[in-house]
Amino acid sequence: MTTKAGPLSRIVNALIRGLLRASGVALSADTLAAADHEVLHAALDAKHRIGNSDGQSRDRLSGLFELEELEVSDVMKHRTVMRAINADEPPDVIVRTVLESPYTRMPLWRHSTENIIGVVHAKDLLRALAEPMAEAQTIDVTRIAQKPWFVPDSTSLKDQLNAFLRRKVHFAVVVDEYGEVQGIVTLEDILEEIVGDIADEHDIEIRGVRQEADGSIVVDGSVPIRDLNRALDWSLPDDEATTIAGLVIHESKLIPEERQAFTFYGKRFIVMKREKNRITRLRIRPAEDVAALPAE
Image (cartoon, rainbow, N blue to C red; front, side, top):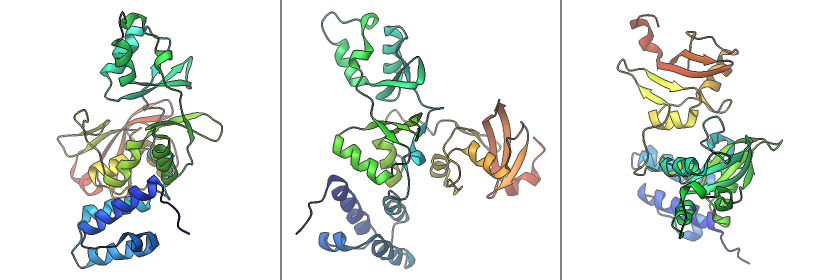
């Protein structure tokens, strides 16, 4: 008896075949279905060792295998950087906010950002504005908003990708075990774990990261470590912390003061700004460059 492959299996198998083919490894559909992750890793590693594999393809294939190991919390946009709409704002302000946003979907909240009551899709808003007699000042955004979909932050990326494809929904609100909002996750966030950044005409360089003339990098504390690693080809660990500020706090075992500096993982981290107990801005430079530079 055979089991019909679900949408996730078909997509993953197609990606694996394509990436292996690009690396000089050809596997039939039957062989691929029977092979486990270790076999496929070994096939690609063999090609990589003899110099025949595309390093980028290899990294992308590795991203596929990580889907079971990573959780939604590893790739979500944290609530502190989440762009959302206050349902109690004047309708014309809401319309302008949605249309000026680089995102097509935005969570809608009332009374508190913890109370997500819907998700506004720019396409639905434009459709409502196109109705006869419709005006931005009278649009009821709560009638346009779609019902929010809440998912646990511990959901594996494989399961979440499968759920996105099954439900044909691209956006979910992430909650912890107590039901408190932690952030948002999109289909694009998960696909980028496989293929790298998906750029479009609205994308800009990674938000909250700025290259300085002296070669250092100024980073907002809320920037995810995974995004920083991907953008700058770094390998900072993200198993104990999600954001760059969290990594500094974890490694230093304290909440640093402004101008305090720490060295770990080959980088020098200088705290530039702190608000209450949050590190909001850091300067990062290679540790070997520190001796040649004047004090901060």
